[in-house]
Amino acid sequence: MKKFFLLLTVTVLSLSITSCSGDDDSGSTASGSYVKFKVDGVQKNFTNISIEEPNDYSAIIITAQNGNNISEIVEIEINVNEDDNSLEELYFSYYEGDAVYYFAGANTSFNYETELYTMDRVKGVFTGVLGNYNGEEMQYRTFTEGSFDIDVDALLQ
Image: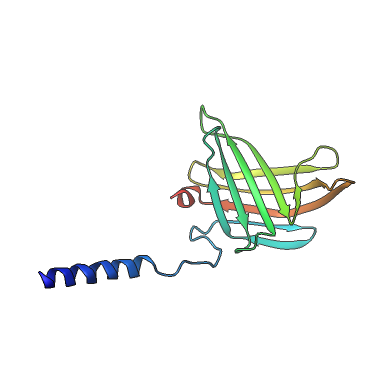
């Protein structure tokens, strides 16, 4: 009986040690997904990607950041047609500190082209000028050379 408890204890300890190995805090995804762009001429490479599928409507929300830095975040919302799972619309928001830059009508624009869209992967390019109203005036950021490649299937597992 002592050998059984010793074997059980060793087994439980070995399982807890292997399952509690250090978490990877590098801020990059194993899926190879990325969002890259220049904002006002400065290159940004975001590889820490997460995906949310809200239950209340047909969309996926992709959140990207550079490592664990939360001072700059990109959010891409992809609305999906429920009938045929086609991409209906793509919305892009850029969070910089307390400011949120988005398509805000006059003087803003956002153009995207999806090179690949399936339920498993979305890939494309984008450019645009997004605005943020800071309470007194509009501030603008120019986005050029934007590209994204998101392995949706890998990130949802």
